[in-house]
Length: 264
Ligand code: FPP
Ligand code: MG
Image (tube, rainbow, N blue to C red; front, top):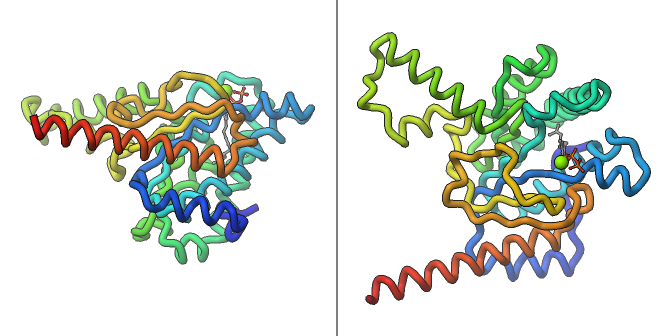
């Protein structure tokens, strides 16, 4: 199963995308893909089938993002908290990731054709060796691609990312490579796992949960947040376009505010 699903939009969807493209398009969209197990329960599937269908939805969503010209996408694929789930579910998710990252290496031509750079953000010390090796390979072969960036957050939490950043800056202070007085927001951001990314313009969370679950807490201080009730595997292009539409309306209101403030 491919990471990018081409030519799946119908005429109506293509028209809607064309209209949306007349407005501001976020440079960077982040997704909390939530609701896989509730979807599986509803359909009487096991949880792994819910996650597999969730992966397929991710592949569609990446194509919608490419179609709209979104340059950066960050997805929350596996939180450090997810290690606390049942042994079977954790193993199933790790196996699924291994399979999908192997597929990704197999379809490297497609990634090169679209110029997609893959970046895995997270604590690699928590990821099993075989999987972390395949992940590193995907980042190495795509490192020079410049058209789009896909960050996959795996074994990630924001608090862990911030803790690791504090540790790495402290060790630089210890060996006199930097002075404490040089530590500022810019240096801190440049030492986060997301150092290659801009901050998300739009964060979308599915499944009706209204919280951030320790995802990109440093990076989303100024992002527009969109929550939707759809469960991730049931997320549709219309849900996605609605989020972009709300983002555009927010940009319009904000610009209007800026103009009126400037006038005052
Ligand atoms: C949240 O739904 C989803 C996850 C914990 C896993 C997300 C993973 C994928 C969509 C597959 C992506 C895989 C790769 C290799 C990138 P949940 O399990 O919390 O569902 P619930 O909220 O209904 O319990
Ligand atoms: Mg959940």
